[in-house]
Length: 424
Image (cartoon, rainbow, N blue to C red; front, side, top):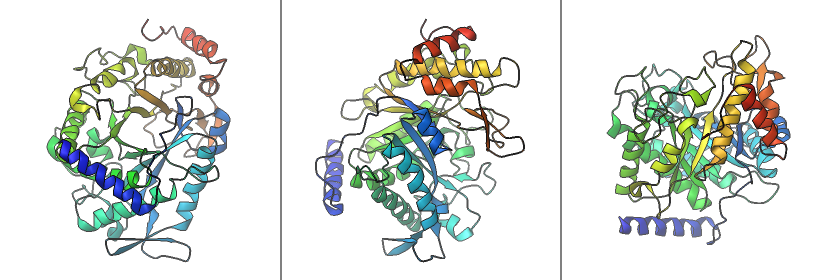
């Protein structure tokens, strides 16, 4: 294992020389707060003081088979890929606004079906089921052209967003896929058991890691897990969903077998019932490694588990970001109150966990296609998909939570809902 690790470091070192990066890496930034948001409106995110921001990148939608003047051409392994100038310009603007303000930006790399059979045949996992529920497949690291595309796309993005200059868009975090332990819904590779899901996922994560770290040595690459821990999503069968802990353990073993590297964890500690924001009442979030779920109530189960020797990197636990989770506001009289209290309780919990770097809230604005959930800081205009209408009480609490007046605002939100303090 040590030999493999040394070889991996040597490969990374020589890759840095080839792309002209300095040998002394710039450390992963600490923006001074754990407050994060999946950003829809950049100006509003800046007003809120967001210090961590995520953006989805649909890799297949960046690629065009009919290039126009100005599109970005990338050669990889004798193949030429063109990335749409308009889509890239949109990313530039959103990423640049947040990174220039000092926020840490993370990209979520997704393989969403485009409806174009030629592109989808390259970008999507070859065994993705045509009936996949949300058009989200596993990344294709199985075919030669799929691997070439993945290297080209991630390498292009990593080249473009590796600058520390104040006027340049900058990305530090790279999240591979989405909620992979519930793979049938969010990372589809057909019906598959643990060994296959872990090994195929690790292959894609390793490619992303190699491309990103060759450009920015202290960037971080994350695996994505949702809150099922020793249980699995009950709506699926054994070859459609997995316990998160089992996938984490097997992924780590596969990575060690191929030469370990510093991957980290993007976790989604939603409440056990997504329609109930009173996370402190979660009954399936137990205080130990055999807990059925890990939610904000028992988030320390994850950070403590990552301290196991077989999961560490260079003797240190992997870092955690809470990269997607939200709190539902019911339509009843207590809905907005309980939503704010759920956030307040969870913010206090994360603030006390050294192993967690960010709480990145989902969503900025309610979305019509989100299964009836009202997770936004903003309501949406009636009849719209996600057009902001009015801010909820959670909006001001979120703005204040890491400021001088935040303590009083958090206390008031908890008291109004009759919520205890975390740990007390």
